[in-house]
Length: 295
Image (cartoon, rainbow, N blue to C red; front, side, top):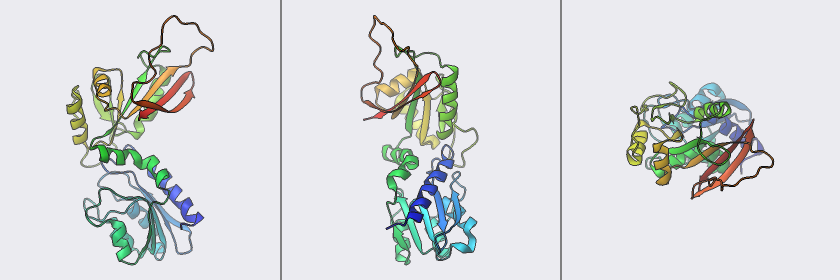
């Protein structure tokens, strides 16, 4: 069983892995912490973008010779193949790592996974360590793989009655925060840009402007670009069509805080479209920020 020190190291790896959100796609955002033979943290690292060293390699570089006989704590199973970078399981073996803790297994492993190869080499490997916590970061990437398309997140400003309206200053500030963790931002006019301008590496591109307003063509263009997470700003014809075809995975509604007591003679619009459930509600200034996901 993992020790309390190892569990703390895994949570640290999960936290630092989030530093790669909005930049690593089509690769996942991964974090790694190296403990020496005495259980002391001697290195940590995360994956920044495709084509750059993976989290394990960065953490091992920081640890240097102190990694020998130690433990690698990593949020995703070390890769078992050479691509733009060397295989991470081999880097761990070369560093003489004795034990590896893995949170999430890699569904993209080609044949025998990195965990199996490490075990064959005599390394003690434990898997599914704090997996649910690691999926806070890796969940959208894994969902994108499962759907074979990006995770689509729609953000809408509404009035108190639930009708789409022009974004407020607070809503624009919320949008500026949200875009940082998404690969692409699609504006109501169909223009596309990186969530973090200039953040991605090789094998990622920005779709031509405007993106198609037919849902199937849109999804194909976003997938071809290498995106895993896309933030759409509504309302727009595209967002309406994506909603109608159940292709929007997440909704964020920005609603002005209502008066404590108010009379009405009309029935407010439904808060959520059919098929969505509330996941989080918070208040930011004079706005309610309402999050929902598909059932």
